[in-house]
Length: 133
Image 1 (cartoon, rainbow, N blue to C red):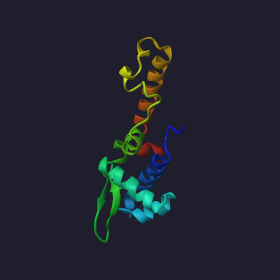
Image 2 (image 1 turned 60 degrees about the horizontal axis):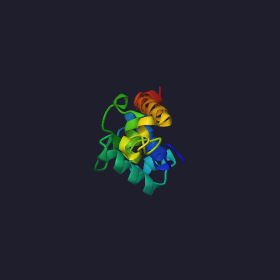
Image 3 (image 1 turned 180 degrees about the horizontal axis):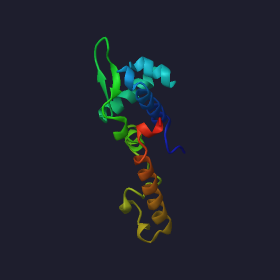
Image 4 (image 1 turned 30 degrees about the vertical axis):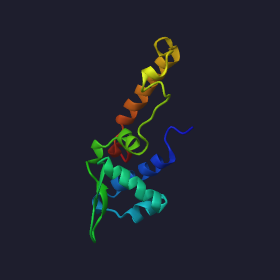
């Protein structure tokens, strides 16, 4: 089981490539796909999801393409992951305590809830800017 899915890995590659090209302006989907070693069709889907999450924006025209919608220091890894795969969940009992009747007395779920929070906080603490520092 992958915690970070393949499409999320592709999206991370694409958005990091946008950070690397901040000075050059918008980058086309085709160029991003090529630079990030992501199949073009998948790159287009991932870029659309990142755009819907308002992490990137597109510009039309001859000098068009994709660019960050916010500064790199205001976008964290958790936001990218959430935009693509809906976040990370260690176990189905974690987001919904009512899904498991054993939850109130389960010693395992208490530890998993702590681990879940740690992972989320860790990912929220890593910005795109920090990745390239």
